[in-house]
Length: 308
Length: 180
Image (cartoon, rainbow over all chains, first blue to last red; front, side, top):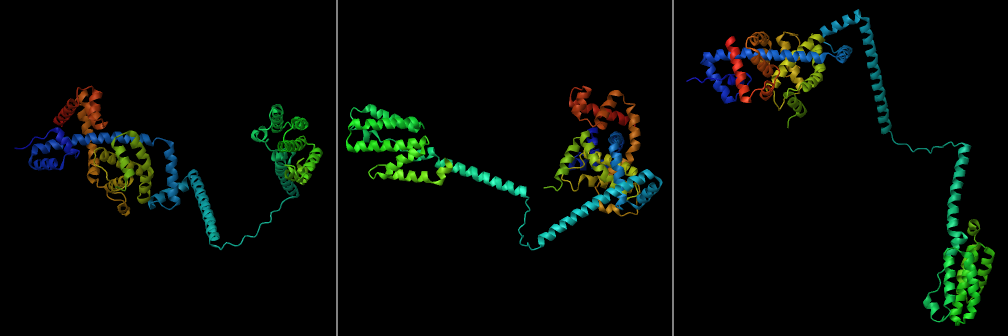
């Protein structure tokens, strides 16, 4: 018994949406079924008609997309370019040449476009020539480069020299001040007071003197050299009243001598500092003899003179 | 992996039927298509434009009916020029030219044939649509001409279900058929 196909199935056949098995079954029946043939024929007309109407709508849409001037310009440029490249079909080439002779405005556009193309061509050739030159240069053996003699004007030379001197001066000044100024030397040669253990055991009731001694050192550390020197001179005078043993007495006495010399140096009284140091350096029993000699050498150096 | 992945992505966009995608595709292929034909055939620029439109219609139908699917064997623009070639051959343009060997045959001969023959049927459908009444006309136009999906037709016409919409659509088609 013949199957009755629904309009849905006929439509699916028309649009090619049936599976291979369904399609085969449909076409087998179609061969002998006059009614199905008539039905398919009718639906095909209707569906073709709809497709044609849809195509018409799509055509209208495409025409609306065409409606802008940009396309006109593009078309003309493309048309001219094809001619200038000798790329047109002979029929179209003949049409183009007819337009060229009959339309001066069009002929002008063609000439302009030819000029542009020539310009680009020239640019391309120039770029290629430059590239060739680069390749040529690359393939040559690299010669030893003669040292370039740079011509420098007198003003430039003076300026360079001045800059050099200035830099040298600044650098030297920084170096000398850091290492050879009076305060730098005080810092370098200063030594902390002897510890309580060394000083204290035999001091007994002389704690006030010790306190003043420590206070004087504190002033040295704070850079208060003037007051420190006064304190040390006072302490020096009082030291003999303390009746310390020889060992401790010399320890304190030598340390005070040394700090008085440094204090003079700190307050930049170089002469008094030198006198003090010379005395110490000549005393073979003085704890700071070698240090004094060393410091005296520093004071005699040119760097010290520059720094001070 | 297909050689034409980017083209296949584009095809997927066109299959959605979105006008913006179709417009973008049209603008992309327009110049190349027409230049091909003014170089290779005696068609003028205007005639090449007409050929482009016809080729686009066949192509549109092929894509929207699901007749063109990935994996692709050529670029979409080459496929379109192939349709143009078949249409030009049908119109007996530049018979003596050997240009058409450069472009592969896209296998759309039945579509081209159908397109050529369908113009008379468009007039028939116009006549029948006037006879089936407003509700049927509206439904069929939405579905076949504007390309609405069943659910969109259902919503637009405020029908109760997709099934009811589908049934009404085939009832209307039947009605047209009986009028032939």
